[in-house]
Structure formats: structure tokens, C-alpha cells
Amino acid sequence: MNTVAVLKLTLHHGIVGYLAGFQSGKNILVFTDSFRSDQQRPTLSLLTSSLYPQVDKILEKTYVTHQRLHPLLSNLLPEGALRELIAQILKVHIDNEFQLLAALGHDLPGALIATPLDPEEIPDEIKFKLQISNPDQILKQEIRTDNKFSLAGVQMKFSMKAKDGHFTLARATESSLLGDWIIKTPSSRHAFAPLNEYSMMTLAKMVGIDVPEIRLVDMALLQDLPPLNLPQEQYAFAIKRFDRQSTANTTELIHIEDFAQIFGAYPHQKYSTTNYEQIGKIIYLYSDNKIFDIQQFASRLLINILLANGDAHLKNWSMIYQDKRTPRLSPAYDILMTSVYIENELHFALNLAKNKDWYLAEMKHFEQWAEKVGVPWRVIEKQLHAIMDKARSVWPALLLDLPMISVHKEKLREHWKKLHPDFQILTDD
Image 1 (cartoon, helix red, strand yellow):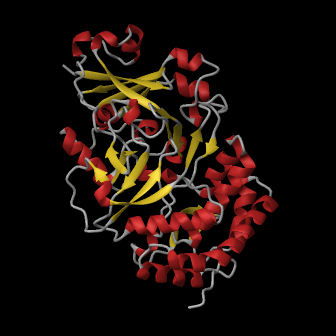
Image 2: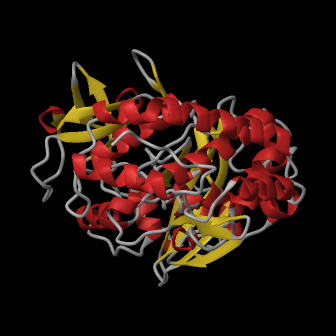
């Protein structure tokens, strides 16, 4: 018998759909009629928003995949070492995304919650939609979800709760204990990555990039971490979760989605599916504050060139739905100098006006980008010149006091000197 388990998908306490996972590896996703017909429904994705022209067809369709989930859900799951660690704890195959989502579904990125259902909890019409013909094939769910969370991405990181100067691993079964900080531990592959990211995010913030609260946290202050083979470095990097709003008694979930979800791309396609023009078009077309957000996006593109960040792929850009419906560009995250870890790295993650080489990038590429996006160049040009003026005036001195290790600082100064004159930053040494 091809047994099946079912997850209920909820957003802000309302049911949006159901997901079936069959023993054969087949997965089926359906949206509910009530979610589809609700004209005031919260935004699960731009693709399910009333703003999107094809929304009715998208919500009516039944989505069948094998092992891998639909990109909307697959992109909620971790990659790399964190995924391996969680799969090992759960005793499931690393590619069994249904089982991963079932276990992690109470503390996902954003506000979507995936809850395992017992057979008697599944409505008959949903059984029909999910192609469940025999009630006996439905498995009773016994998945433990305590101390489990999901953070998309490759790097080892943990959702933690700040309390009394310490950080404790989140407990997904209690809303008051959901993680409101992301903690990135030292990396065995990338030396002093926490110091790198903290320093680069600080430089970005100093020139007007919207950055969440960040900290360097002594590793001794992190509690309940699983056994990890970490280098002997003192600090972890901490960034406040902008998809969580904590009060004294509870934590509110704020919905977000990354651009891999928006484009329907899987994580392994995050470098190849699209370009910065297409991302810009979506921001400019759908954002509730399109001028501010497109200026922020252009500014962050420039920052990634200035800071030699070659990893600003689809998953490192997100939209946030602060009021549960209206899209805005989220605060910045995952800005670090990647070139210190990748020998001879010369490229940013996606094409900008058909160029990927940051040493060939100049202001004209941004003008071509603005033309393709459809935003007036004067709106972008003014912003980029302001960024450059500020960076040239404050970064060289500020870098001296930042915790980034000396060899990385020197590589950043060398990078600044090799950029096109439009973007060069000269230092005294």
C-alpha cells in the first residue's frame, strides 16, 4: 500500500492549502477553495496575490512533484551542512523534503506553518483533491517538532531566542520561545566569517542600506547547540530576524518570501534562473513604496560590487509583507566579502546589464539596468552618487576600527583600488 501523510498549511491562522507526501516519493500540493475565493486573503506569495495577473490559474492548479517539494515550499528548507544535520537528527533521507518540512514546519522562514494531520482531521474534499482513495493508507503523524527550525541557505546557522544576555535554541512548539535572532557560528571552511559579515553589514549600514540589528556574540553565550565541529573562534554573528516581532509573551510571525520562491526556482537554480533586471522589475512593479525600494535595491547592487560580495543570488533578496498583504523589499542580509574565500573571484552572482565582472562594472551598467527596469535614471543616479560620496568619505577610516581580520581588510582595500574609476575608493596606505 502506498501510504501517505498530510500537512495542513496555515498563514496568519487561516488555512491556505494542504500537502500530501506519499511513500513512493510523490508530493501533491493543493490550495483551498476558501483561500482562493477570499479577496482579502493574506499574501502567501506574489504569485498568489490578487496583484498577480495569473493568480486564479495558479490557485486552482494541483501541483505534483517527486521527492522535491514545490519551489514555494522547497525554498523554506535549509541547504548544505544544516540540512545534513537536521536529516541526521530526524533519521530521514536528505532529499525527502516532505519529511523535513513536516518536522520543521512550526518555525519556517516567514509566517507559513506546516502542521501534520491525523487521518480524521483531513476533510473529505481534500482527500479527493490529494488523490487519497483509501483512508487506511493515511499515516498517523508522530513527528516531534521541539527544538527544530528551518532557515534557508547553506551556512550553519540557528534560530535562537535572546534572554538575559544569552541565546537559547528556539523551541518551535511554543510561540513565546520562537527564535527572534539568527546566529551564524564560525565556519570550518571560511575563516572568521562572523567578523567578515559583521564588518561588511556595518559598512553597508553606514551608507544608508536598511540593515537589521546585528551583533557579535561570544560563543560562550550560546546555549543548547548540538555537538558541532567548529573552529576555535571566539565570536558568532547575530542578526535580528525581521520576520519575527517579539513581545513579552509571544512572537508574531511576519511573512516573507525570497526571490527564488517568486520566480519558481529551486535552490540549485539560484544563480542561473534570472538577472538583476528581472528582480528590479518585480520590485518596481509590485512594491508599495516602489521608488524607495528600487533605490534600495540599486544601492545594494552597488554595495555588493564595492564589498566584493559574489553571493547576492536569488535567495539573498526577499519581499516582506509587514501588513500581511502588501509587498515591500525586505531589509538586507547575507552581505559579506566572499572574494577572500574564493580564489580569483571576479564576479557577482547574477547579470547586471549583461555583465558579471565587478572590475568591468561602471555607472553606465546601472543606467542600462534602470532603462530595462523602467525606472527613471535620474532617480537611481542621484542615489548611487550619494552612496559613493558617503563610502569614500567614511569607509577607509571606519574599516580600521572594524573587527574584520587584517588580511581581509587589506584584500578589501586592494579590491577598492582595482574597481572602475566610477566606483574606486582610494585609501592613504
